[in-house]
Image (tube, rainbow, N blue to C red; front, side, top):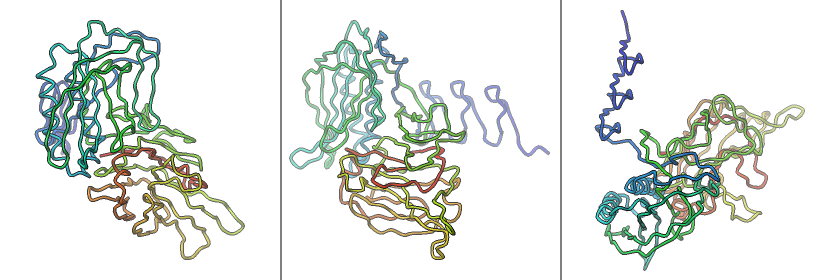
Length: 435
C-alpha cells in the first residue's frame, strides 16, 4: 500500500500529504493558506510577504543608466517597511509599535494626495527627541525629472550596517516635500511642509547621525521592488553561493580569518570572525545561530590539554578604551584543562552587558558542545537578553542606546577583537536568522 500520495505540481512530483497548489506559476503549500493577490502569493492569515527594494541592474562604476526603474509609491513602501524593521527596538522601548500602522497609512495617503507626476522620491526616517518627547520622523521629498540618465561614479557598502549605495555623476535637486512625525507617547501624527534638498546617490544608506536612533535614507532611483515570503527579518545562509549577503534585504556581512566549507563558514583560530550588521542586536528580536561542526582545540602539555577562555558572540565597541574589553555584550566560553576533575568539560559564562553583568547561570556544555545545534539569543521586549538553552540571564542594561542605536558596535561571531581574545573552538556557522 502506498503510504505517500504524490501529485504533479508545476511539473514536479510533490508529497500529497503537504498539498501544494499553483499560485502565479509557483507551487505554494496550501496548508499555509496562500492565494494570489495582485500577482503576489499572500497568506490567508498572517501575511508573511515582505516587500523590499534592491538594485534594478548591476551597479558598475562608469556605467550610464536610465534610473527611472521604480515607481515612487514602491520607493515609499520600501522605505516604510525597512524603517519599521530597523527602528523596531526604538518603537518597542517607547511602547509605540502599536502606532506604526496609522503612521504608515498617513505617509502613504499624504504622498498619494500630492504626488502628481513625480518619478523621484527621497526618504529619511529616524527617531528624535524634542522638549522631552520622543518622535519618529519621516522626511519625504518628491519631484519629476525629464532626464534620469546618470553615470555611476562609485559604489559603497557599509562595513558596519551592510547597506549599499552608489554615487551618481549629477546631483538631483528636489523642491517638493513634507514631514510626517509620530509622537511616540500619544500616537499623534503631524504633517508639515519641507524645503528642497539636493543629493547625488542612489540606494540605501544607514548611519548613526542622530542622537536617538540610526538614520535610514532611501531612494527609488535605480531600484526595483520585489516580494519575498520569509518568516525572518534577515537571513544569512552561509552555505549559499553568496554566503555574506542577507537573503531578505541584501545587507552584506564581512568575515576575517575564516574558511568556507561545504555547509557554511568555519571559525578556526584566534583571529576568525563573522561580522553582521550591528542593528540585528535590538530589543524585541531573536538571533538564531545554526552551528554544524564543533570541535575543541587547545594547547597540549605533558599530561593534560589546556583550553583558554574564548569568545562565541559579541557586540564589539570600536570607541572603547584600548585598555578595556571593547565589549558591550557577549558570550564567552570558560577555559578548562582536561585533568581538572571539577570541570571535565567547558562551562559557559557571560562577558559583559554595557558594564552590567547581571545574573549568570552556568551549565556544562558537555563533550559535544554546540555540535549541530541552533543557538538562540533573545532580546525580549522587557529589556536585557537571554541566550541559548544554557540560560544566560541578564537584567535590564539600564542603557537604552545599546538596544536602539548600535552607534559604534559590530555584531561578531567568533573573535571579538578585544585584547587577548581567544577562540576556544573550531566550528562551522551554517546560517544566522533574525526575527
